[in-house]
Length: 164
Image 1 (cartoon, helix red, strand yellow):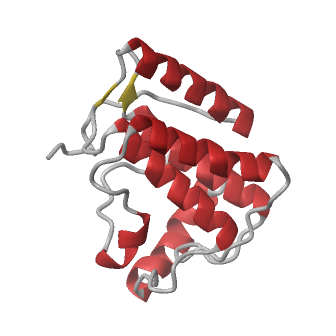
Image 2 (image 1 turned 90 degrees about the vertical axis):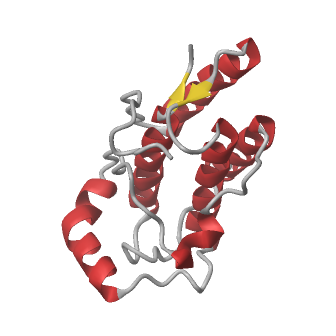
């Protein structure tokens, strides 16, 4: 297991969904060229699938069993919500609790499957659907806050993918 808090990552900054889409094009190109690798514990397909699952949950809602304990939820809201909803890169190395198993990717995810799933969810928002779900950690958020949070989450996970 890689200590993802210390693993090498690319420093990414997405100011828009268009920036994210351009990065996905670069990742696709590296995959097609055979140069894509990861410095984290998940394969490229798993990273992409995880991002797709969380993106979808931001639109459709999270599974009801995803209820973090108050001693996690309240400090997170107080200390991290402002930064997260401003689009800062999510912190690395967070161990997801058992209740979060629905947002963990499956063990074997083909790159093309993960990429398709993420692009499909992005297309929902660029096509007019809005983020409106209640976040298990941060509570109610606007579409813009959700968008920034999703972009920061993508900055983290896609930063583990090395293009060359």
